[in-house]
Length: 92
Image (cartoon, rainbow, N blue to C red; front, side, top):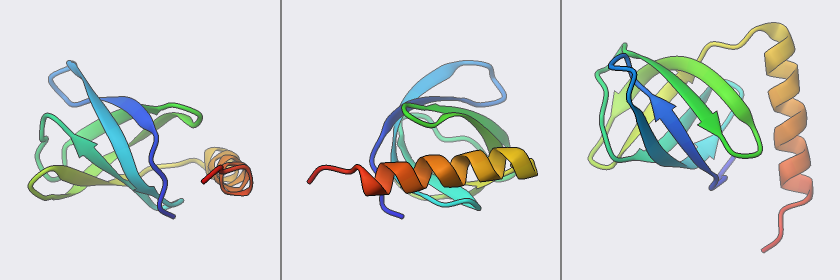
């Protein structure tokens, strides 16, 4: 789903960077970013209203990258509930 939220992310260099989400699903997240990582690199995201997510960089483009999320079944269910709530309470 298309969802724009502010956040921060950390690559393997352990430095934090600001970002904005472009879209989010249970399988992955796309973020607009300042600093690129490498495909396959581990990334830890802390997204406002969602919390901590972890995964690996799946694709890089000019100003964004896509992360393949690695979620436990309970974290997947929690993310599903949060995304449902955000969609139902979104103001336009």
